[in-house]
Image (cartoon, rainbow, N blue to C red):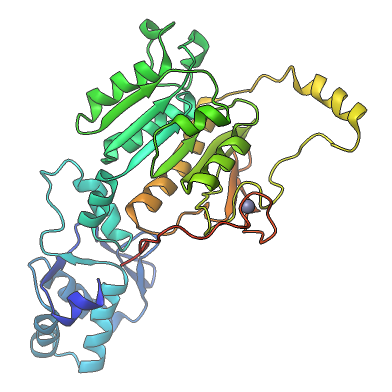
Length: 369
Ligand SMILES: [Zn+2]
């Protein structure tokens, strides 16, 4: 809750996601990463009564009066109990939840994350995301963004649906084999999110010139596997001041990031993020290229889902302005077999050949209210 709304003491109501339970010697209020653990049993009854009191909209002053006059709690304890509810994001504005709204369950998630859902939803509706690559990761990125209320999506892909895609490119059907991926994906998105403006660009893997011809976006999402695309997109985005994020897999590792905000965060070239052929040994580099040239990605449904889930969460965080993207200044990976989290620093290098001279673009306040 913002300090301004607390100053005017607007009525607030108990968030529908709040539950209470006792486990062992501890009462838990809220559940999840923000759960409040209360070990003193003398506080349980007044805290539960206060929580129940907020089933109807109440001001802070009303709650303190209730604790003092009805629950017979001293002032410092009353303040602490109210703070327990507030610090767990348990109280929301009186009309923050409208079950009839199509985004109502997402709204609860944004409120739980400490943001005002209306504001997040408005930011998403005003956003344009350009997606390079409509394969396994792209399918899920696009579906999540469109159904979450992102206003505009541009889908770029030159490939056609193949039978071997269907293990992970879930918005395509057997009947779509042979059709352009971008067109089929657009058709499926329009069925699920008619309010999202979807356009398609069916073309081959973009080079520097064709990237410049693409429409400007609030965020470019890369889920294409064509060689060298990350470097090309990075140069294009740093040059044009567009935010971009890579989502991919490295065999069995689900990978996303870094979220590149030109002039503000590290870019793809600030740190050495991937292994490359040795430029100072042409003979060895040639031999390595001959091995790498026969690479065929072991693309797996669950690994695609994992990478796309974690990447799209960061996209929503950045565009909607709630929480902090996990891939800000970091390239993240989940090792799917042993579930280890891999973090590579992608901090900004003041001597980076690509972004050293770039200044921050206009910054909107992001994150928790
Ligand atoms: Zn850089």
